[in-house]
Image 1 (cartoon, rainbow, N blue to C red):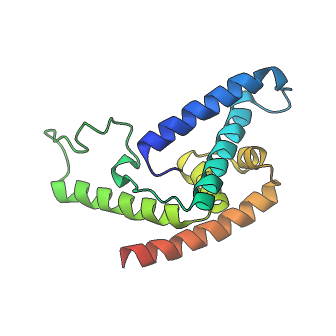
Image 2: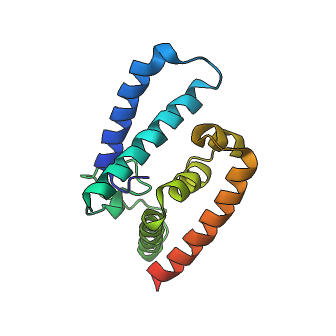
Length: 157
């Protein structure tokens, strides 16, 4: 959701510290993972709000999108049975376009899309994380996907 690997690592660390401090207050009304997701999404939203209020815009590392590798490692390492290199480059280009479009969505829309499409969470889990009814999640996801589709068209044009 951050669009930058180092920011994501920093945010994850911040969310983990918040979760550990708040653990004695965990009531068990939801799954622990849902509770931690909620803390993480809230920490991310707070950071987005703070950056917007300061007018702080960063350079975004598109190479970090969809890769669990360290930044030092090459994104493509040929093996004997790989698809042609242009196929790999096309995938990387598509990922960059999607990432750029995702970053243009507002925080709420981006959170819903990322939780559903990237994290593969159910509507119920997303609702629990974001504090929304399941029907609201479905309608907001529908609208967010439509916005994303429009943005992808603009970014790729």
